[in-house]
Length: 192
Image 1 (cartoon, helix red, strand yellow):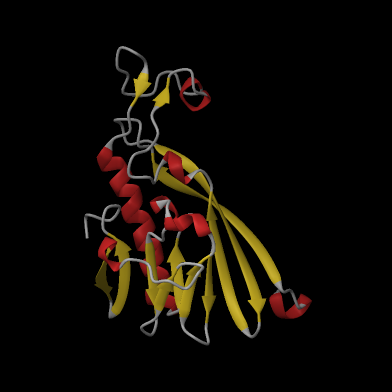
Image 2 (cartoon, rainbow, N blue to C red; image 1 turned 90 degrees about the vertical axis):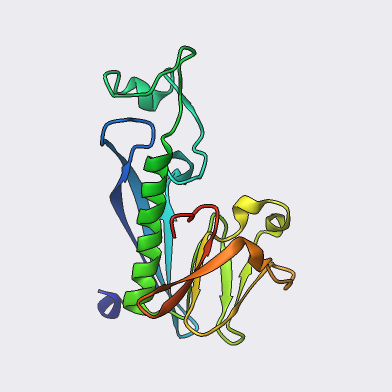
């Protein structure tokens, strides 16, 4: 299809089944993912966007209430209600979703061996010439949630803020996945 129509960009989408972190039972939340394929300067880019990651991925998912639409839609679900009606996320379910996302990133690194890949809540620019990646949002210097969660360089490279200063490495560890060195944020991926 790409060759036939000489497309520069193609958007695809699919739904993932993520563990519902708010229910005791093994239930799933459908989560949308959009993938864009783009050709630029002789390079091929894949951009993957997750919808509402704060509902299932964050270390501390925001609490829900029985008046929230997602809860009202399933009134007989095994929601963990406390007397004030707040529903707290289950840590083991959140960890399972984080494992799933890590496996997705490590699978891409293992199977496609890209020059660079990153999982982040803000855009990251990759420069192939210098084998460096830059976080585009200047706010990342003060907002820890904007720093990358997982990243991978095929050849040893540098991860930098938009002003070219290095990101502190003390919040990251490296793990090997089939001979690939994948760097991950310690707090979110404490199971590694």
